[in-house]
Figure 1 (cartoon, rainbow, N blue to C red):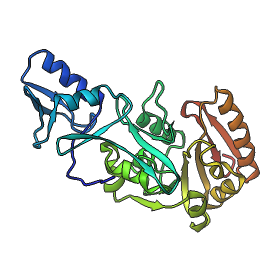
Figure 2: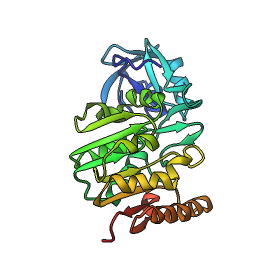
Figure 3: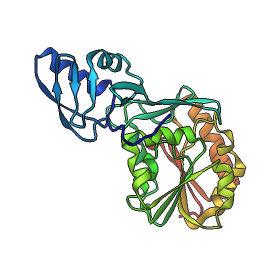
Length: 289
């Protein structure tokens, strides 16, 4: 999947429905967003399609394709909508970008990598960061994805190191308008590789906070292991803490997973593990506070 930055217009059904409504109302112009709701521009409504200020054109047939597909975001490339998706030869998994009312979600192998029920992915990321506030000093983000937690942490942290296993995930993030700070913020350092391996290369007490938001356990079991938690304990500063996303604690699978996670965290040396049900996870403290 090409990530050429010249392809500036990214749309979903959320934007194109408004364009269809403008056409049906016989309007010649409308306000829309070229970047999934981050900014707004005025576009021209024509007989054959919509003209964007940057010169992009989208026919009504192509707008219909986007409008009827509620589970994908599209880049406009040469006047043609291309779904933002990819297949990884590295992991054998499919990736896609799914729209929400605000920041989109990453879909991996059919699993949403973000909370989308009754909350948007960016708000969910903020809940995770808030659960270990104040976020200061050096931060380790173990699973980059679209970069929302790294971006939020970098607003107050001295530096953030974020690790991504799959290069296709990074390609998806590069064309997601909501992920731009992941590549532009000098406080964020991106690392390619498996967090279970990369964490072994960090020094003892190197991080003040860890944000551990791994994929589902069925996709990344080693990131829920006692061995990984021992490494997390090792690289945390004495007063450090780690947020661990697990899933809805009210669900049967979430409750079962939480029980096992808490036991393994305590076995790894963490002195206290506090539930954070609103953030769908727990906070593990290296020392009792």
